[in-house]
Amino acid sequence: MLALRLERRCSAPAILLLMAANLLWAGQGVAVKLLVGGPGPLTIALAPLYCITVVALIALSLRGGFAARLRAACTHWREFVLAGIAGQLMAQVGMTLGVTWSTASNGAILSLLIPIFGAVIAVWLLQERLTSLRLGALLLGFAGVFLLSPLHRATGAGMPVHELAGNCLIAIGCFGSAFYNVYSKRLLESFTGIETLFFSYLATTLFSLPLLFALEPHCLQALAHLTLRQWGAFGYLAIFLYGVSMVLFLRALGSVDVIVASASLYLVPLFGVALAFCVLGERLAPRVLVGSVIVLLATVMIFRYDYAV
Image (tube, rainbow, N blue to C red; front, side, top):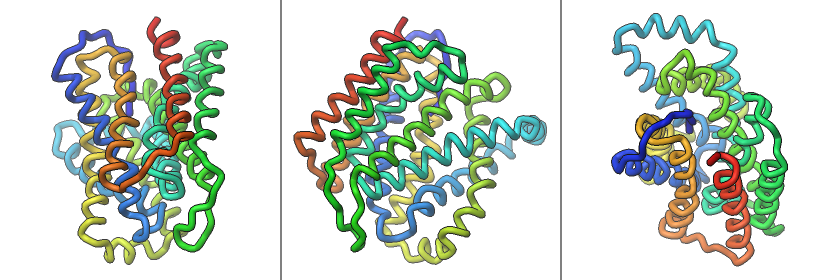
């Protein structure tokens, strides 16, 4: 999810694009849950990204001037590697591992930590002040994380795993996503949004591909044994999550103010919980509802009294 500081008026088509993008993002947890039991978690996180990277590079190569843009990207390789590893890789691996150990509902709700993390990261990257409001919102958001994490054991594959650990990994994934959003502003000065997105995907692919085969050497065999339903979930992650949703979001940013685009993240937990309920049959315990309200409150604090100035 890229953030641009644009001064635009709100339009109905842009709002529809934002709603569609958030609906696609909200489906990540459900798709990951459907793939659990097949490939390993790293394969679930990275293989769809590799597929959309190949497709995107083929599409970009058909455009005029691609070779010149690729050479320009190579001169900024450090920035793209940092955006890819500390941003995309951390975001996708953290979210996928976290949802595997936790629930798709928690993954959707905890995504509201992304704008809170973004406000704090901006202090470091953009020299913005760490106000008491931002610090308070960050601490309040973490309080919601713990309320969302009952200390019981889930017996997935015979191995006990604390749901708290899964939620913490989801939070790490949210941090990676927030870092990518903020750091990409530097790259957007020299590259378009689409170029920034897919060149960072390329950096992520080149770095993580050897790591994937080292940690999950049988990943290709696992992919070959996917069921039809699991292939549908895999295709959703590759095409709609990593591809279509980002394209829709970038197009919407061309005609709406960044505050409107950022506030649209409120839709992710609503869509995500609804999808988890309808597709996976997940239920929300009372303390989970309280935790989700706290995370939402922390996010509203940032937008209402910090970003919207």
